Length: 278
Length: 278
Image (cartoon, rainbow over all chains, first blue to last red; front, side, top):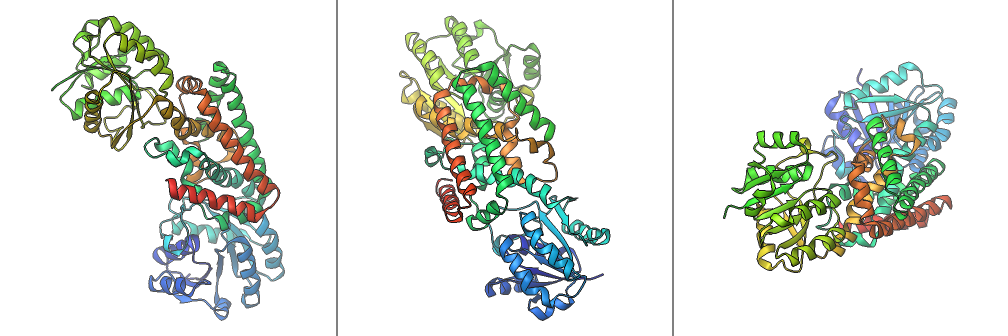
């Protein structure tokens, strides 16, 4: 069945969803964006079929919120009076508990179906101009279904994810998502942003290879988005930063003591963990 | 002029040098390795022309030490009585001051020419089986010439580096090399080895994307080599680890205080540094 899919926010993620849906499925895309310029470009690119307005929401089967969390919540509240019952509401924010707790009860009260979601894909650049139809190829799609999202709703979203190129969908709780993402993604950004602060960064050219590039790649981050995401997931993220400082200090002390057997043991354990856990 | 180049140690780096020299130049390679098996394989692969013995060193123009620092120094001392005057001695170790201070004076006393060197290339695996003729393609080659290495000697080595695919040679002091490498390479390995120690690493599958992969790639390290290299460059490395902990703590405190303006400012500064310094 051809569906009408409204996407709020045509940045890197929303724009990539729009392009992927248009290129890989028969569904219709209605685009919302605060920038008229972005809407015009997306329409020219045939990434959207129509520029959105509230009245178009009535016939929308799926509303995808691809905005920063606070803006996504605000957009959803504004859109609520216009949505038909049984509309599937999906947000694509990088934190889940914070947004789940605000959107899920409202969906339940209003007969809407809510599934929180997080596409594990990104680029170290942002905005519609960076969006790509193949951004999600091979990526994992994490789903945190609300109380009234039944198996049928989850299967429907999983099928769409398959069509868009995701390699797997993982269903979990918002809390488990957030503690995992604090580690796999948010900590990586904090570490990279810390790594680049050494006074030696200025002179790295000619003295660096792959490991420096890997460590600093995501330091080129969007500070507006990440400062919001970090604070909305502060507790799990603080735990990971503390864990990181603990292990750096362990290495620091082994090196300061020139304790080669201890240092070798610590490194061997790290290698073993990487080999085992991937 | 066709040169005879002896390579001591046919692991990832020495093996790649041997393969690159044989594939890209007319020079002759004499291989030394403690493993007879590795020597046999390298000879079969035509990565070396001859298996080494002390008597072959007399006619060697260049001796390349591609062993861990302490083994490189030992091999050099054992080889010293067999080397002809003006032989160019080059080590490829990842630390320079430690080895420079031991080899450079001996070279001077014995009429040999010494250039410390460090190819800024590697892989997260080791040994002859991992060596590649194109490992150095596009990489930087850092040179720390000894007192009696004149311009002609440095130019000769630079020409060879060009032939092997290096994109640039950088001439500097052992001390500057070491403080830069502590940051660009050694710290990256300590950070990666610390990152993988979180209890959440075990469950990362499905919850991770590029940034986790980048952060943990080099955790798969050779603990025997890196524990030696870290301790031979302890002071610059400790400075970088402390710097890293300082900035992680800065981020930690901004998040704990929920200070969005401060957090945004810190992140913006990191992004600016990455954009400016590369």
